[in-house]
Each structure stands twice: as C-alpha cells, then as structure tokens.
Length: 115
Image (cartoon, rainbow, N blue to C red; front, side, top):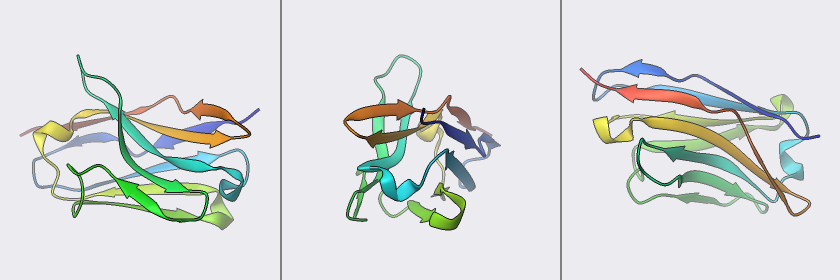
C-alpha cells in the first residue's frame, strides 16, 4: 500500500511564500511520476509541478518562475516551494504518485492566499 502525506499548507498574504511537503511510504525513486496538483472550488484538479521517472520536471505555465519542485531521497519527500503567491493560487494541493500503473493521492493540504 502506497501512502502519501502532505503538510505545509496554510494562510498567507499575497506575495508571500509557503513550502509544501509530501512524504511517501516508499522510495520516491520508485514512482514513474510524483508531484503536485491543486483544485480550487468549482474547478477541475490541475497539475502544478511534477517529477518524471527520469528526474525531469514539468510545471504549469501559471506557476513557472514562482514555484519550484524539489526532492530529498533520504527522506522520501517531495517539496513544493511557492513564492510570490497570488490569490488565484488558493486551492487544495494534493500530492500524486504513479507507480506500477496505479495512481495514489494524498489527503490534500489547503493553501489560502488572502490579505
């Protein structure tokens, strides 16, 4: 059973920063893809940033230059550093991992950007 546990969400003012963490119950290098998605109220879940199996990264255009995905293999953890946050970044952020043809999701962590 694969488990993904997110942390680090919260309330932040526009222009502020947050770092999200996603800790996996197995080696992060065992995933074909591992990264972050988000879902705002009334909207579809969308990709934010992810690592591929070969270690390359993909970012949504809306976060390029502001968000950075990174990982620590020793801690089985993937991070999402979010800078210059905007109100439109407000959403529930989910960690998603794909391995052995299956998708696994964390429980989500809320990020609210508001003054």
